[in-house]
Image 1 (cartoon, one colour):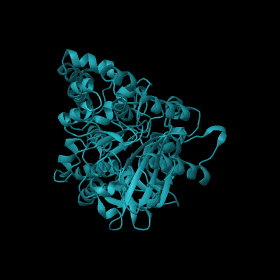
Image 2 (cartoon, rainbow, N blue to C red):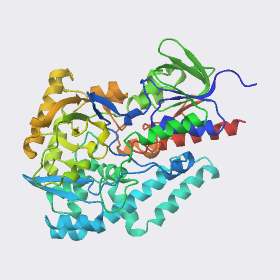
Image 3 (cartoon, rainbow, N blue to C red):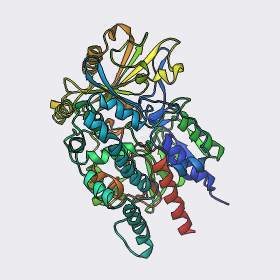
Image 4 (cartoon, helix red, strand yellow):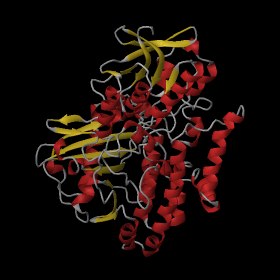
Length: 529
């Protein structure tokens, strides 16, 4: 008879935790999922911020779910909602550059601003699609192990080499050039139109406390294009039935596979005895016996807060302490009586992303302020009206507007705190910026809620308010995520695995890290049996 308890305790009931639990349970493991929040869903969960008004600020982009995860969970039938104009950029008073999903139509839109740029758009987006497609291949398998110990370890590296050669000589060179490049330089290499370059660059600095001049932002751009159709930016299609569609389906799949899901079950410690995991302890004292623990929390919380340091070498402790999070994203949620008429912008464009930053200089200046712990006077703001996609998230006839704001640093200068006054000032700045382009906006606001990086840390458990669970810098991705030497999901304590966005392949790949971590756990279990 098997001992009482569980084979695996999964920490976190977001997309990664639920996908991992499903894979493990379907493999015959007894699984318990422990979620600290009162409900499941992780970053993608919907919450009410004003009476009758609900939002999921992190659920507007569905991310890219690896096809193998979708097939294995039987979730092929989840429907998406058409969104033909995923991105628009302010080009001046009453003027916007709107980029449709179709590359040909986008080129026509660009032609009104720059005929020369229009002629290069299809070639440029085709190149981006091929390069991001290479990352897709990397993201569906464990990261390469550069510490090759034998022929078995060499096979994945050979497969990676074959994928790289399949790009062809021109794209191989372009990939090696683009990954360390700044998005400013990349945009300058191809285009002259300021708003078009700003549209490209904004994707390269998303949730990153660096400006478009920073090296490595070319990689960030490609990362956020993984899974998107060729020819466009920000074009991954949202779920038809709401932002929580995938996590709800994953929860149903986990429950059907036999996993036990517990909410309001916050972990306080990961239990270790005789140099191996034995379970977890919850806030309140309850202990749960488990042979393995798969954490979808960030690496710092998992290894520095929950594991007694006596079980870890000083080298791994130092490496984890040096992980950079540096949250710089905040949200302002507006409950609107009606949508204002926007000069120069079709109302349907608000179902996508509308960037209020017209040029690279403005984007870089906003980032400069955050370097010194200051909130920029003119932050980078992107707005979306999700009720155009999901009307049920507001009372009939009313709307929700979500403003995503960079750069609002987690740590403020001179020990400043994110108190109500500072949050209110940020909300005022965002409202004023929107008013400047959309006359009469403020008169339609019924309520607003400001989520600072501190609020995001408390509500969603984001380390330093970082949605990426660790900056997407070149020294914190692939075989160096979360830290060099420990990228293949198994952690230094036997029986402990990392399967959240802190691990490969990182954020924006819902279920991807959890799926790979569960695979690593199952492979280790087979090797021991």
